[in-house]
Length: 111
Image 1 (tube, rainbow, N blue to C red):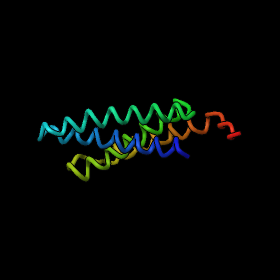
Image 2: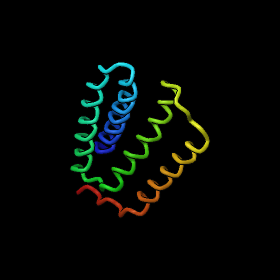
Image 3: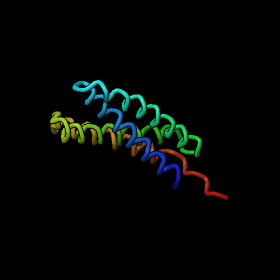
Image 4: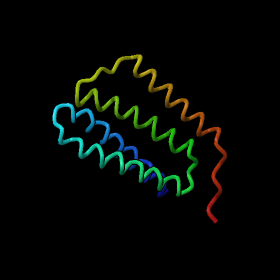
């Protein structure tokens, strides 16, 4: 359960950093949040991997959820486009991650 909480935190931190990167186009001070956010996201992702989650699963979920969340939030916060092809692409990414998850061997039960 801890590794899932860490993965959610890694996703949220990466999304915040990416949105801050977009915000830095108007105000350079946001670059501090970008650097701290990406550093934090990779530290959290490392902890997820050390917790035993397979790299393909962790990175796939991190990437897919980060992409989807960033696209939706950028549309809301910055007025970026969110078209049907973008939504379909995000759906395909999520479907691919689900296939990776389903194809991964089950984790060993704690002993």
